[in-house]
Amino acid sequence: MGEAPAGSPVRSERTGDVAVVYAGDYLNKLSGERIERVCRERLREGCRALVVDFNETSMVNSIGVSILLGVIDAAERTSARLVFAGASGQAAQLFQLLGLTRHITLAPDKQTALKLLSEFTDAGAANH
Amino acid sequence: MAEQTDKLIHAFSALADLGAEIAESRDFEEMVRSTLHVVLGALGLRRGLVAEYEREPALLRFVAAWGMGDDAPNMATFDAGRAELLCVGSGLLNLSETQTRPALPQQLGTELTATLVSLRVSLVAPLVVHGELVGLIALGGKATDEAFTAEDRDVIRTMAHHIGVGIHNHRLLREVERRADENRQLYNNLRGIYRDTVRAFAAAIDCKDKYTQGHSERVGKYAEIIARELGWSEEQIEGVAVGGYLHDVGKLVVERDIINAPYRIDAKQSSELNRHPAAGYEILAPIRHPDADIPLMAKYHHERIDGRGYPEGLMGDEIPPAAKVVALADSFDAMTTDRTYRRRKEFPDVIEDLRSNTGRQFASDVVIAFCRALLKEVDGTPRERRITRLLGKGYIEPELVRPLLVELIEELEARAHATAGNG
Image 1 (cartoon, rainbow over the protein chains, first blue to last red):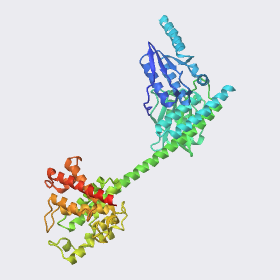
Image 2 (image 1 turned 120 degrees about the vertical axis):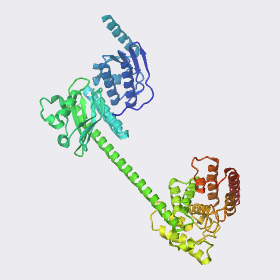
Image 3 (image 1 turned 90 degrees about the horizontal axis):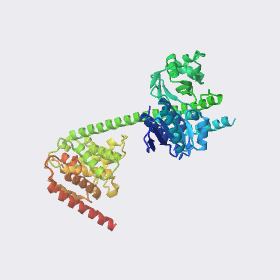
Image 4 (image 1 turned 60 degrees about the vertical axis):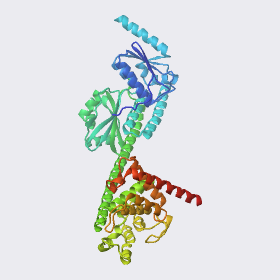
């Protein structure tokens, strides 16, 4: 089965156990598969939480949804938390409609997402 | 109701995505992977895979999978009987109901059904085009955990049909490409056979003249070198090379005693010998050569720019360019090889002959091109020294030949420039 072709790098950053991956302006197959690959890499590196930042994303098509479902799958396999941040009203509605929001948390922006996750990781640490 | 409408709008939008992916993806596997994404994204499905059905050998080749981790199989045997069963139904198979629908394992087979169930596949859509199975798409459950609705099934059926057509069209394209490759191979083989036949013919021509063995082959090679230097296309270069190989084919009808006469032949014999260009044309004209000018190269290789050649006494541009190339190649080889009644010329004398006969016997651009090709060899530009090898070891002394060639090229270019200025 074929590999996705390489393209421009996906922007991502990491703070402790949390990685932020930026979705770019248009989430389609080419960019989507690269994003999915970066998410998997961060999870393999040991991240316990991922934020996918849709702040610059103007459009998510059906292929983009499928790829995000792949990201959800990857996160669930490693029991990592997943937050979609900064999604437009239309994208958020789509995520809701197709059931993605059952598996992720929606946050209005990256800062809120990171705050949510810090509470989660703090709580996790306290429980240990 | 509003949610259902939104879902339908998204599904319609996904159908548009599907059409674009099928139409625009040139790579088969990429097309299949994209279409799988579209179906999964249209309905929010967590996993799925697409398999292509191959009749010979009867198997399903899994081309794309998503959300299956590393568990997706590469292929599964799937006999023609099952393929026919799937086509007859042409509906969706609900694997979550296998316990209550004993017909399912018959259609997919127990083993494949078990594999798909283990991969948490809920629904299988056969991809059927013109009543034939081209593949199947297997889909996991919805991210909402809801059951498939009737509308979902309609969307899946429609998309499966499009994907089937896409796979079918790619197959047709692959078949066309395969046949085109076969034809190209066949054409190359035929060209090889043609070239070998031409070479064999050239050898047969040269056998008739015991003093000029290898002449036709050398003329072919010189002609090829000149044409390449003139910047001709590969087809033209090959054509003029063949013309060189076959230029003396008319000698087959000239008596051997005249060709092999160990003295200068008389006027009558000369007249007999001079029949060979026209005879060559007669021999070559009925053959369908890749280059239609080949018979003309044989016919006109003894024509001269000044009109004093034979058989027709053509002048200047009346002579086909390829015949001008063969004419120089022929004369050059005659000057640089021993004949029964004379030794070959020393190379400076050859240069002198070219100088005095350019514009009379030979076309100026052809001589310049030949000299340039030789100069490049003398300077060591091309790795392969074709002309010097044909001339034999020690015939050309680079330090002596180089200035002669440079001087001749400059002179002929100046002459050509002056002629153009006068014109």
